Figure 1 (spheres, rainbow, N blue to C red):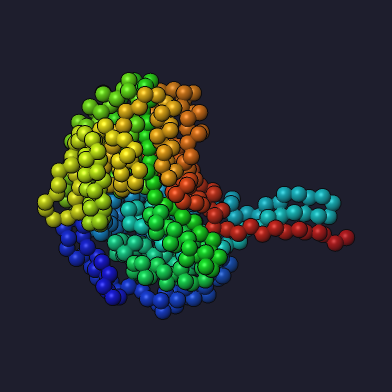
Figure 2: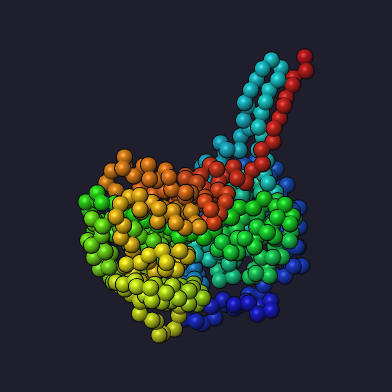
Length: 462
């Protein structure tokens, strides 16, 4: 919560104030931007090996401080402690990918030589990159943008969600300890006002991770300055289980993890489930049983799989979606009990007999609430999966690739899964379709995204 320039960070498991920070204003943000604008050319002029060395040190420091970093993350946004540690380790894995792959994508490319003429593409840093991020995976999301931006010679003005300000401060401190200069990466503290002030700076590029509604606002503000903008936005990711699945129980276990990991607060997590009528009954039985076994409670305690939601507003939204579905005929299979204690808890909840007149099948739920709909055939499943304004990921479970490949190629999504879900790997691009955003992070494309091409026509005098 932000009051004036003071921000109180609230523990979502207890409702207690964890820490208080002073939010940045337009003046301090402008000062930080101009510091980065001055420092960026010197950073880009360094050999790539020096930038790599600093970021290898940063990765090592993350490894040395995993427990304290995870503890702060759990305090600030409620991520169960084992999952918080896994996020820090996952961030290191992505950093290593960028460090090992970056060199080949920064090299000049010689395309044509004819007589005395050579054609070449050179690559240059963009300049100062602004990044406004969200709270659900702060280390992984920062890694996706901050690391390749720094490796390619850019400076970064990074604004984490106010909910994870302490996590952002820890990340920044370790970057500086790793000898990334202070005039190359800086952090902006604050909420909406700080974000707007950041976007008023003459940034060379803007990156945003968050909701579609907020992304629209960011895009409109960036457009006033003709700032190139990358948007990683909302989702409503579907899964389809086909009739030919033999091991229904194993599929149910995989879908369970995809739906409820990080308390359901994952952009690529399972939010809608479609099941062929031939396997509907056993799938529902297995998934219901496993959902009821998930342990919810204090996220600092090992073994608790479901923690609190990061914000109380999200609890209200999920309850509204649940009430709407039940009113329209959905059947409650698991969860749904109101939470009466402290904290932003919402029990893992599973609904059957849902349809697309219900809000939870049309909106982004972003929490442990999932609906299951029975379908008659593959074409019906595909139509329902496509019946969404979003297009981030989609998954199909089937024992035969030849059967599902045509369906997957027709899906308007940035990522398609076969027999898996909620999976992000650094060597594959991350992008969205429709209202799920535009632009790409991760993979070699996510390295090149932070570079500008320059065409060289070179004629050697005789």
